[in-house]
Length: 411
Image: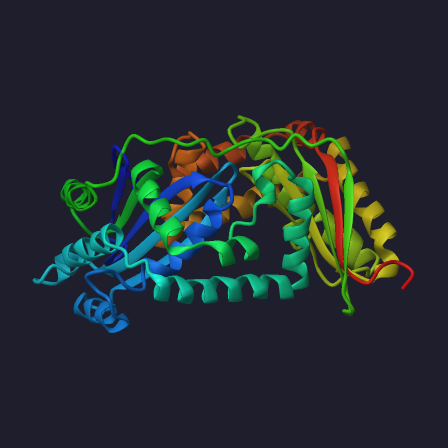
């Protein structure tokens, strides 16, 4: 499988698998407010207009001229760091004489260098960000997860919602956002990725020329292990059919730990397979929920269990969740379950190789976790995990939060 070539903060994968080129520019800054809210506003503003392209129609014209150039932005949390990504995709210069990627590259660099941050663009960005936050609040399961993380992570980055905070968004002014953007360009860590059909050395030179205004030497820490010991519970009252339950566990390990793969496999065994422990016991054997699954907030060292239940069954469901975790901790599970989890994770990695964005996401995380950034090395690491490493990993898990949204027990 093709691998990335690296030159400083520029990472390119030359492959004939894709006839277009996908490029991603990623900034990492502190995962704190008001910076998180400001990055979300910038994600709206920077791809919408600029000083040299002051109308939406100007942006659309350039995209059309570059054979349907697609430009997108998003924000993501990485533990102590918070990322702002700009991604664009267009046809490779190999297939068009007028060099569409070269034009697109220069265009994106211009958007980043000359943003149009004024009252009008900020007002529109606030409307969009606030609408997005309202949608999260209206979704009971998403809201429960946000609240659970806030409760578990007080004084930790986990408590900061990656999409911003309503009161902070509303209070941000034009001058504040302009000053912050200058600081972001000068001080945030950045990495630039490109995947597609091109000549790798030539692509590195093209990207380096376009984004020479970005500093390649800035660093920021991302991974940490949330070290909470006090168990907390919370509830938000809503008159809905199902009560949404979130349980969080700290694993007392960060993603840089050499044994972290065992924790990820344990999470898959617990609640990410059709025959996972939680699905078999809580849904199939007891009919206490429609779906139940586990996840990992890997840069914070936190495991989650999420489900929708009858409020009257909350204590029973929580006991059963703990019982399934105990099975992993005690090694009371079939070796076949571990093999199935390995097969699923390996399949997920292999399928990532068929999508340029997934390839970039995978390799970005490998860089941040300071591991070998090849698909083959990641697969080998998964296959090496032994039975007793699962029990050892789960022995460190500690419950720290139970949060519900819906009706309370007894109602």
